[in-house]
Length: 342
Image 1 (cartoon, rainbow, N blue to C red):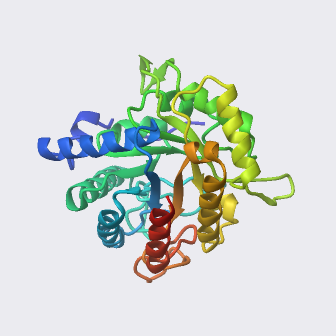
Image 2: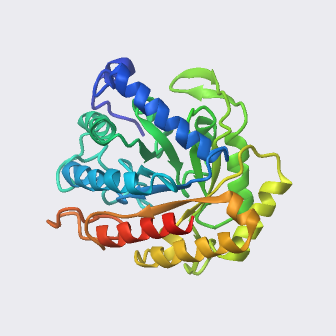
Image 3: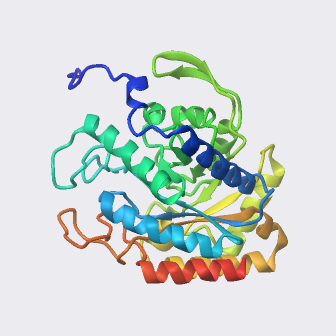
């Protein structure tokens, strides 16, 4: 049992010189980040959408999608705040399959993580500098946070990661919102334990150094559904589910209660068109119950240029190679619906 070094030790400071933001761009990002923080803290009542492709496998297709999203953002800016999903790391249950842009810059090519670091930074930088939007990514590998912490504005902690202590502790040191997904079991106690841990000051070893985190008061609940012991989907976005989450927030010592609903994954059974119905049901539940309206103020939506999905070697420009996504026309209509009913 051993590890074979495939590269020299990576210089974090040198990496951060790649695709570095200018002072003007940094200030622009900071202003937009403050808007995002205000939404999580309840100072801004706009609906937050973390929206975009399941995985960012094609840089040019992602950029075309985000350019369209930026124009749509301008149309709904009074009611909706959108953060594009630039998910460059993908969890694989068995370790097989496409693991994201970090691993493969060409989905059908060979893995090269050193080039992947540069590709990841370049894509996040392009979204910020070319569209004025700021980005979300999944923190699949906590030790890699330092590669992107100056570029990413929203960090998702996945269902397979949320029970891991290192993920919880690293999330406690992030200066931006950390969306903690419920585990695949759907267990709410585990979910709230993760939020609590991320909202505390923690001491641990990070990248070979003893550190103390600041705590992250912007860590919050993401409901993505679960599966039971028979493999059946158990959604958790319905009215009764939201009432339970509101109650759990109220019974605990949590800062900035906020509920994000993941409209795909086990909530939709990966039936991408169901995302539309899930959003509409949630918007109705918000109108019915003021407590739900105060807390359920965000959606994760998987969306790309073309609806559905294709295989890794597919040639459809702007179509997912991982989970199926809404197409652009359906996305545009849904975002406008949210704005009109917020």
